[in-house]
Length: 76
Image 1 (cartoon, rainbow, N blue to C red):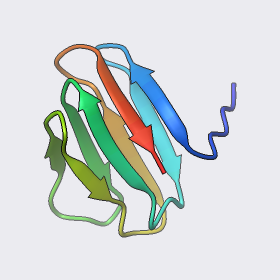
Image 2 (cartoon, one colour):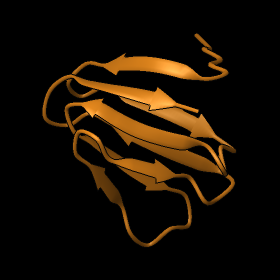
Image 3 (tube, helix red, strand yellow):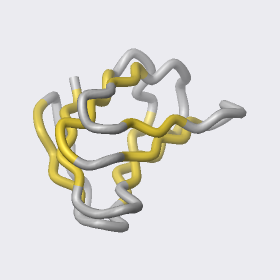
């Protein structure tokens, strides 16, 4: 399955992974729940609590993960 999202909201179930390919410049915001973000060739991972945002800075693969329960995010 392939999902293409121009921008908008996504609900991630606990343990769900959203893969973002070549998303440099894309902003991910946590609206509810916490998310973990890791970007290819980036030494540090990002953890967003509700209200937090992160702009992807690298080309390649980024993983957005909801490790501790459902999370609502926006992608723009």
